[in-house]
Length: 458
Image (spheres, rainbow, N blue to C red):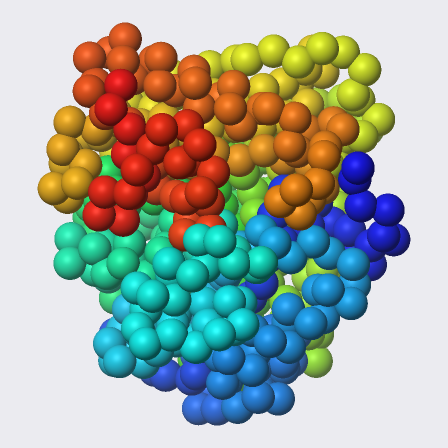
């Protein structure tokens, strides 16, 4: 039976898992400071002290164990199921921190969720496979120039399944002028390595940067999906704002820079939404930066909803995942579901985007199957890859019965289809980039742990 608890902020766990966000201690990036970055010595460089997650972290002096415990307790109080946790690590380029800090940080997250200390990370992960609060997915924020083979191995050792990289705009001249510290070449290389290791890849995009304009933003955005070197799985779209204490706040008058108006942001977002294909999800629009921290007029924080409402009113067809999810379309559940497969090339590999939808194109579940462009991890030799298996709808605890999407067999249907497709195309094995807490699920279907992946002979 589905949970009868009245949820506070149901959207928080409305996409099938319950996110739990923790923040890294402040540290300057190795490359310096991007022009739009707020900086700051006592908060992470790309955040302000008024962002909700940062305020929570400051309360505990960035102690990760206290952050996890506090957030877990709050989610339970709000009525959210906490047996399937997506751990999200924000605040800086995680892989630029000292290794000992990284190791203890990740170990501490698992230990609090397990309710017991461990002698090492491996033991903590083993316990988490069957713990009450399991890490079913882990997201790390990163930079394109921090995705070497060695760094990818390390992220897998930690249990990461999703990586977000700051791309902002595909323009080397703007990268140079804004102090970004990398080029498009690093974006292309990182995208391929991450996908070929099975990660789900997210880009942070920033329209309205200095030296750009509305026309250029749309042109560069089109390249993200027209050019197979990119084609991300998800996006966060953060229009550039002038935040106090940022380098931009000191020079914006000198360079004659103005932020986009709400009207311009709406135009950019509306055009971007029309471009985004079925396989990509817009995770968030606008940063959580309070108006008192802004210089010049701040953009409306509700601008995403305004744009989406306008799109729905015009009955424009939008393919982006979040607008099609079952959790946001409960009024369109009348017709039967079907399996739909979209094939496309991405970062020198071939992708199969499997989705279960109904006749109104409401999305119930998806699976990302990849035939990799390159295999550089021994455990993935001869393997096709499942980069994501996700069933949408209100998250449930592990043993709860579902009614509309979760826990009614959609995951099994998608996995069996992926196995069939891989086998028909000559692959001997299928490897899943499983979160630590989902390993038990894959064992039921004949998968076993090889390295850090769940692998099955076909």
